[in-house]
Image (cartoon, rainbow, N blue to C red; front, side, top):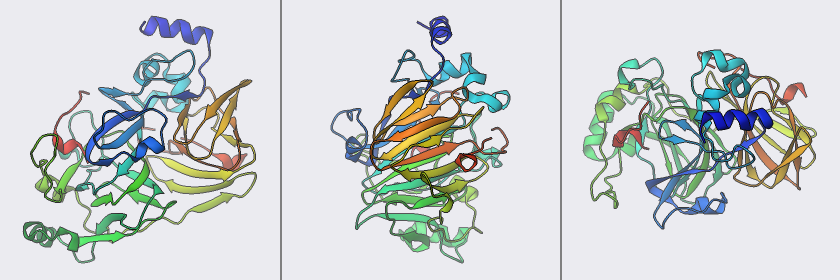
Length: 363
């Protein structure tokens, strides 16, 4: 049952709000807290650091988990129905340009940096840079976010701190609280951990260069993970300085409170909170919804699609505007492609490659 079957299925049943199976990823810094967020059981008993909930990565393409298209991959659907899914962006995109995840950082991620789209010397063929952002869902007393460098840090002083084992002296840090939005442009030195759970939106890239990995040994391999210090330092934006949570911009207050958290050249993200029905999606462009608190249903074309905490739905461009009907108080994140971008457009509620095993490709 390949694309011919998909053609018949879509010919009989129009595209609809699509939910995908999470793709769980082992990470030595992970935990088991995603079991409390997602309904799909975690694999095995080891640490699970990431759940990829909307992915068009080679070897890790999301599979539909609801409706007539169950089992089809996002890549298959995009290949056969680019205009229906991507709408206005179809002429410029060969794959879905974003990767959405939930992260359970029980321990600290490596101290790392991602290259930008402009640093082509550090990008494998077919890859983009990696700007990303987090919405903090859970945090505790020991939670930490490292984001940016202390004022005056240079490449030379950073190398000295790495050699002396005191790299944290160079890092800007803060204690996160649930609800914080953290924007991490490519070139930002960063890490997170201490039982912190976040939702992550990022460019569709998996290029990570590690500066420091806290001298850990991976229990799965019995070895320390590889570092890429020279490449990491070459990609750092040393003029950036200290980063803090972004102040949300309130766009609407009823029937739902709509806060814009991120608006950059790669993605836009709003947080929607309320208990009365409210619109989601937009005509002619795709949107993604992530329910982070409460339950409800998305209503489209006379049908209702149940949404639980941890569910992520893709609203194809042909689906357009829908109604989200909460079952009590809910909090939903809505993700859009930007209004103008190198390879990607949107309006919002305000108007009512080959899989890689390089250890440097992991956080």
